[in-house]
Image (cartoon, rainbow, N blue to C red):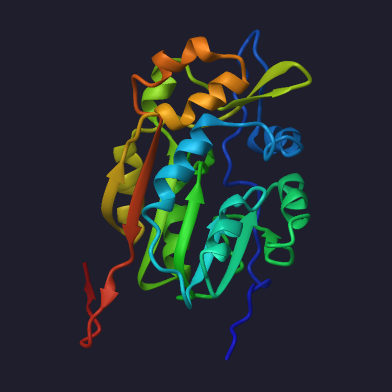
Length: 261
């Protein structure tokens, strides 16, 4: 029996996202405002952090045959399309940016599989997903514990989750969550957190941490700097971790009904 892809009875809101914090002399937008502008070029502008993330995470993904996958904060459906190509049985993508989802809906691989929804109130039934990917989103969420509980709610016992984001070391070096729009740099408001704070929130919400990687940019990402005509920044950028990749798992249930690690 095929389960419904979405449970549309669960309401959502925009309250999950960080509010914009104005900085004199800089253009900083809220999460929704920023991604509304970024959507038009998101898939076409090379990004070294996304390139690094794809390179690292692709090697960690398990066999997806017969699996129900969920791409949380899916944006233009980048990871959802990859997961389906890797053999996932069914999949869904959820995001609150209408503009990003419009771009996702233009892709045949994910058309009809994406929905505008809040990560604090997912329109997904309990104990449904076998694997979740949440890419570059936790820095935008005010209440990570609430997000973790909601992702745990929709996850089967024993299921896996991969969570990636901007490494805090980059923020300390002055790196920004930003993109170019009409020749200007636009920064998106985000919340500074340590990796440990992220891990603590998701462990409190019902997940166990299996592994956490903190890779640096390296030779495979050099071309992105060259295309952007910023080769002068490449060597310095490679000196510190650029992203983190956390691999979590929902505890499995024993025959006695107890949760195990």
